[in-house]
Length: 183
Image (tube, rainbow, N blue to C red; front, top):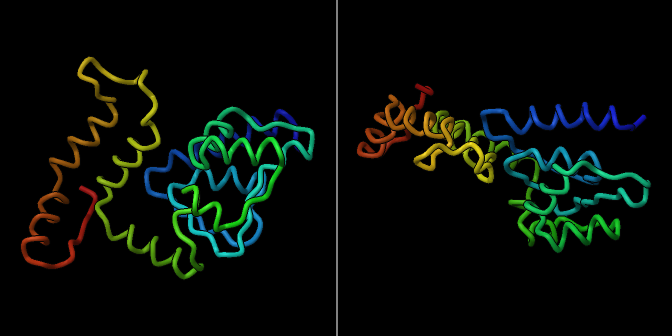
């Protein structure tokens, strides 16, 4: 049964998913509503089949979502679409979700696998540092006197000092695919 305790536990689970150091790709097929949309909000990238549908039907159920969900809806769907979905309990299709930028691509489960495999071939330090920066982009309270988030700066410096940078440059000059090791 859903109650405030459930919401608090859910928040911790969603925070952990969002904080994963590697990019998360969500494949969405069919109905993605309520908790499904909240899970999709934690993903870095979303691919949906053309028949996918999205809704935040809280007004039909007499409940509300937490403020994180409202902020994520506004950021990922756009203010107008988030208002439309939350205040009317409207269902939007995959085409509309793609048009507003919530869904990155319309595709199949195979496309999700291809994208995930492609991401896995990229430099791990670059990916984790970039993801941290993207997830925490609006956290001005973490900036030091030079305007850097200390965690982001450490990731930035680690990437620039890494063996992966040497490998990436070498592979580029040799016109081959790099083999990154995350160090």
